[in-house]
Every structure is written in structure tokens, then in C-alpha cells.
Image (cartoon, rainbow, N blue to C red; front, side, top):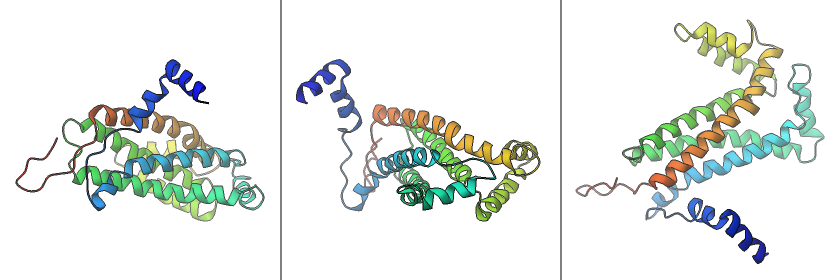
Length: 227
């Protein structure tokens, strides 16, 4: 195994990849503040779990009004570990929103969005919006009463947008009312469009974090704050 590892290091530089991504220096922090620097990595871990569990769920899910609800019940009751995978994906979505929000709050209150990390912050805001898009599109997929009417309410709110509201509503629904086109559209966005966008945004975000480094914790009053 050591020979294989050395061969991969020489040909692909995997040791350099490890050093760049995982062996980076984190600013010195004491007490609870030290844990705040783990929020970004925790969010990335949750996203990885969401990707894996989502792929497993997609193997048994049927994105049609006639079969969507029954396919979810089938996953929970008959697929091996289906209820566990479904539960991980369901609660993972909530944790991902919470962790992303906490990560952004940490960045804001510690001033980590300032020079030279403005672009990192903007990409992070985009990631947060994509995470919300994941939650909204995924909520409809079980096709039960709660999911249906929650999506109707969310769609009506979006439809009140000045000028563009009616167009947003039509694009979202795939027509005048919710139906098969709506479910199929949400499913396609959830499993194809958003994963591609968020994977690219995460890649850019990680590159910027590595390029600019991790910001120091703010200094006490009377001392200069590190950039």
C-alpha cells in the first residue's frame, strides 16, 4: 500500500492536495470561539451526507403525482435502511440551513467579509441562497398535504414580486396550477440544476478560502484588527 501511495503522490500529487485542503493553519482561538471555525467544514460534511442520501433516495423515488407519495412510503417501509436514509436526508436539510446561517453570522460578526475576502463572502451568500433553494424544492417531493400547501403558500409569496411575480409563478408551476409539471420541474431542479450550481460554487468558495487564508479573530479594543 505504501508503494501505491508513493506512486499516486508522484503521479497525481495527492499529498499536496491533502496539505492544501486539510493541513491548513487555522488562526489561534481559545474557548468557544475555536469551535466557530468548524462551521464551514461541518456544513460541507452535511452537504456530502445530503448528496449521498439523496442519490440513494432517488433510486426508489418516482417523481409523478400518482406515485410520488407511495414511493416515499415504499422507501420508508420496504427499502433496506430506507427510513434511516430518508430521516438523515430530511433532518440534514434542516441542519444544513442552520449551519450555513451560523457560518455566515460568524463571518459577519468577526469581520471576515472585509478585504481581501469580499468575493469569498459574496460566493458564500450565493451558496446560502442555493441551500434555501434546495430546501424549498425538496419540500414538495413527498407530495403529501403539508408539502403541497406549503409550496402553494411559498409560490403565492413569490408571485407577489413586483413586475416579475406572475412570470416567476408560471415558471415555478409549469402552468397555471400545481400538478405533474410542477412536481417534475421541482425534482429536476432539486437533483440536476441545484447540485451542479452548488458544487461549482463550493469549489470556488474553497479555492478563495485557501487563496486568501482564514481570517484572524478580532483583537481586543485598542488593538489593530488583523485583515
